[in-house]
Length: 182
Image 1: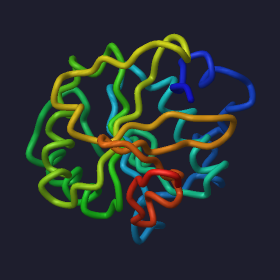
Image 2: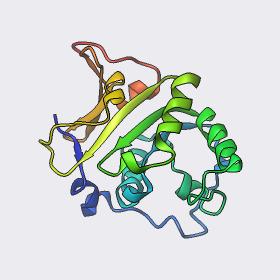
Image 3: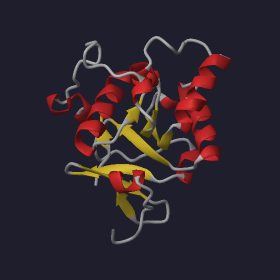
Image 4: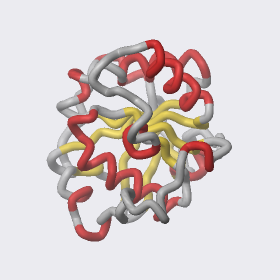
């Protein structure tokens, strides 16, 4: 198994459709809920855009990414009550949260807040390291070790339990927990 790398998310295979085309763009109001809330650093936007498309195309799961789903609604430059209210609503609309960690994550104003809110609200969280190489070891902030992590084999994303076991991402979103010999 290996982690998703920046290079993998830059490959043409994962090339993103143009979100900016008005005819193809869906608004948040088009969704009753989201399968996944992708918590991430905005400094990783080039990878997150492609990760969202990869998950939606290959696993048929819906992903919420604030600046893609609501490009004119939220002010990323400031921490405001209005932004927090909208993010709380979107977090409540999501079944799971994937915390996309990278070297940029510790600088994010919102990621720890989103993680804490979702952990208290629903608790169905996993960590997705975005690394430079597939074989890189994952060393995130200490508290990230409390949650399962995601890696991949071939074209399957796996959620790995902190005590062992694993489950396909689509099964995890449906409520299955990692188990040994899955």
